[in-house]
Image 1: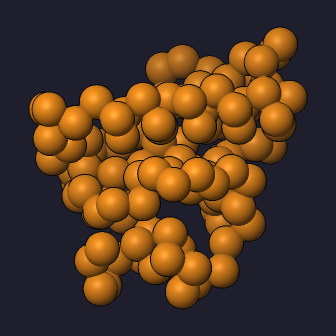
Image 2 (image 1 turned 120 degrees about the vertical axis):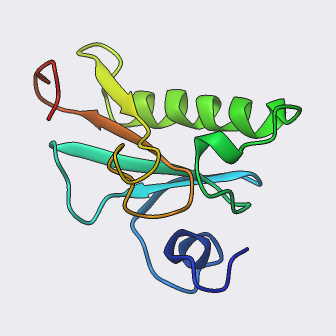
Length: 115
């Protein structure tokens, strides 16, 4: 855990969030500035700055994140209509919080290409 990381504080329940899923490795919560009718963030509880910093020999966190995405999408009714999963890495990639996180976006038709 990083003492100054916003998402670490959410994972440790030091900052409130609208949690939709949690297990021992990940937590998922509604984004406070949603870009779609459904906008949930899925984060690992252990701090990692971005996707480039996830250890290459660590498949468990990635599988936990993918399982959480499946569960959240199902629970929020997105499986039939579809949804998008996005992760931003670095400044040019649009990453605003330096804790790896995956956006689940859905609830409307999403355009391509994005921004």
